[in-house]
Image (cartoon, rainbow, N blue to C red; front, top):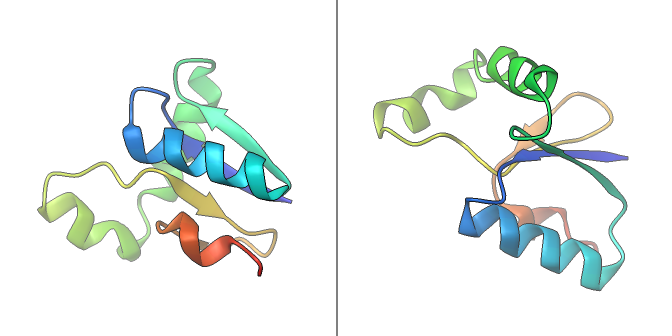
Length: 82
């Protein structure tokens, strides 16, 4: 099952959740406001070099969607199965 790290204060995260719900994508949403553990887990994930450009641009990198194999991406549209 996918893990989605984000915040409902982020319009992209809101769009991701709406799309996943509408399309029946199975996922667990891990909101930073709900749990410090969610934030800690995301910050650890954010140490990955894939976040380097995001950090340079002053962005957060959410929604961050993690697959079961541990790999992740930032564009929710790529996770929607047709």
